[in-house]
Image 1 (cartoon, helix red, strand yellow):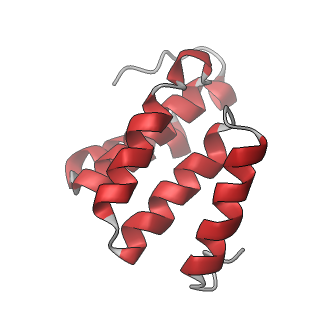
Image 2: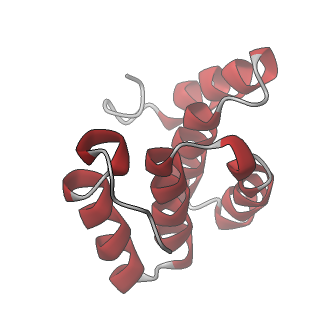
Length: 103
């Protein structure tokens, strides 16, 4: 909610609290990386991305695509940003039941 209203500091605070409560929960880490990127804290975003990537062994296909998308966002890899976002929106195995995600 705070992200949507441009309140990056509050968003970061609550996302970090969420991660402290459940360090294996992928979603708040993705949102934290987005928040840090939007604040211009690219080094911090890349550090969080490194932590996030360690959690992908139990991630769903949707979460894997989100991790790849957020990595492309942080590294300004626009081609892969679009590629992964298209998969998330249109070819997500969690929604279509059968496609295999390939990075």
